[in-house]
Image 1 (cartoon, rainbow, N blue to C red):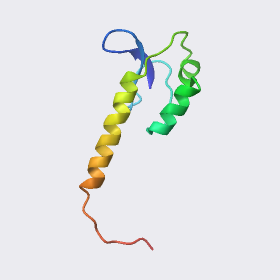
Image 2 (cartoon, rainbow, N blue to C red):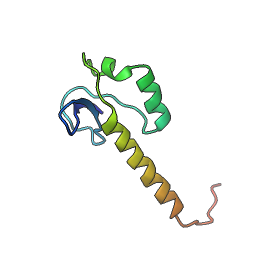
Image 3 (cartoon, one colour):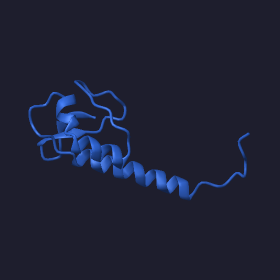
Image 4 (tube, helix red, strand yellow):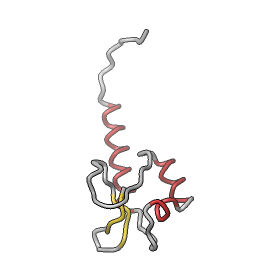
Length: 85
């Protein structure tokens, strides 16, 4: 994720899954637990060297969409019956 702005132009954390946005970036595992821990520790303002508080709504929406996509793919995945050796 990178420091950017939300849809209303306020400073915010912005997802950058392709790692293509300019500037400093920060990485967090795409899980709710890692996100909450990083927010609690205020890790993003330090990692991104931002002097302002960054809204997390765009990243929270991104995490929800990832989790939703993963749960749908697991529900619709046909079982193969194959076992690992």
